[in-house]
Length: 458
Image (cartoon, rainbow, N blue to C red):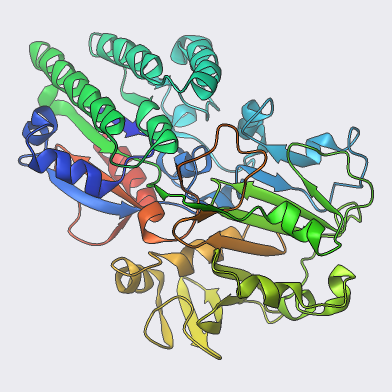
């Protein structure tokens, strides 16, 4: 029986994994990948847990799934009644975490739906699973809550490891196992902290035990094993809390966790916490987005000032994007503005006053060429990621990505994040893609692993 085991080490940076491997502290992963692959892939935007699982489990990017972020507002449904319309304002960081399955576009299918012999361990995305195929969901919720406040993340990894090893003795064709501790310790400390490396070493020991069990059953040669992550991370030395910033400009602002704001002029939905979606005039239902030029008008925010221009000048902002009114996007940074559009898999990037995506100038090419041009740069696959983001009707009027060292929450960031993710910058977007079989020798996105897994399973 052909099988796939997808091991996701949440929040693992590729350079951290590579350094630990080179130091000899990941002997089982070294052995597993000797004749396979140790490469890097580009994750989805926002580079945040939950939405960044979608490429692995659906073969689609978040915008295509209509789950554009871990926090969003449905501008067409939200009418300003904070309790009555609460289902139109989403946060997967709290009690609404279980809504992601029904929030996904109805024509998007999970691998769990297509392969009945699937098992998920610690997954936030469970569409298509039965309780027996999602056996430790209760443990995920319990340890997720306890770990968040105690900063003790290892019990979650231990529970996943125990059930993953058991799965080697069972006839599952697809197993998805998420190890949460690396991400938890990263947020509390540093992406390469001792606690992070210790948790990664624990995953390595589990992989050694897993491959030994598979070998005992004669199943190792028929098993594709992938070790991946959903996002990277970087130190957060500065907090630029967007919601208080807007309020300080005189703009009534709606933001989590306080959602009973009367007549807000703007809604701020932060993810990661290094990305944010901005919605103008929430409470006035509409289906269209405001354009970049409209957002730059002082009257839009009712302050008499160009707030978008003011934001662009802050060191916390790496990139901004909004629709340009011509069927594409306007992308901006302190380096200038450019237009970006897509048609039939071909992207067109046209600098207007600068090169915010650092692509080296104008480019019209298939999206794979944009990936290849950008994967070693400061914003890997940013063009394709932004096009996908605005494919979701739920995406904001304005999308903002933080600069390295910054995030967009302060007061309500409990506990405070010493490191974080969510942005389009390389430390957040690049992830390890290690496998016991060779992977294609070309730049990869995490979504590219989905057809590889399905092909292995026939």
